[in-house]
Length: 161
View 1 (cartoon, rainbow, N blue to C red):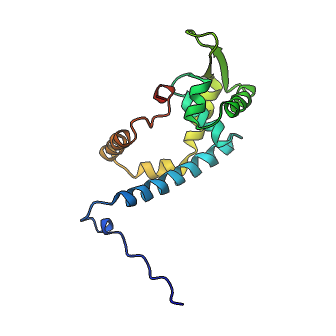
View 2 (cartoon, rainbow, N blue to C red):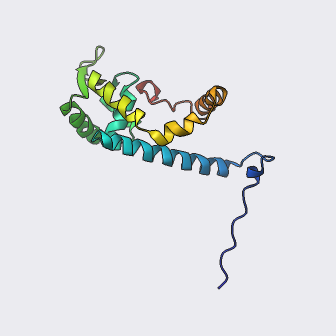
């Protein structure tokens, strides 16, 4: 049985042809995979699961109702309760009643939670080193393009519509 022929290099790699959507999806998948691995390892240095660290990251922007936090983390409401319980036990977050609806509990990042998520981000060496290869104009372009492609991509409760 003949071996599978090697796949030719994508046309976009020669710099004369724009990448296809499939190539862009592959590139994004690879980049997000590396980012997630980096984030996971950094979170583990703080004895946090990726979901717990993601919750801290989301709350870095502003407090969030439990339901919105569950939506942002793409998990069930019962699961978010456990995540918040464990973070609260470590005094990284606290629950507060919503000022507009007493039935709703907002999750608020504590100072210790801010320090922890900042430490996690500082330990994301693969991601930070990759971003260091970009000059100011390239970082600005990347930021702008990501915002255009993923307009609700910022991790904040205001983006749960």
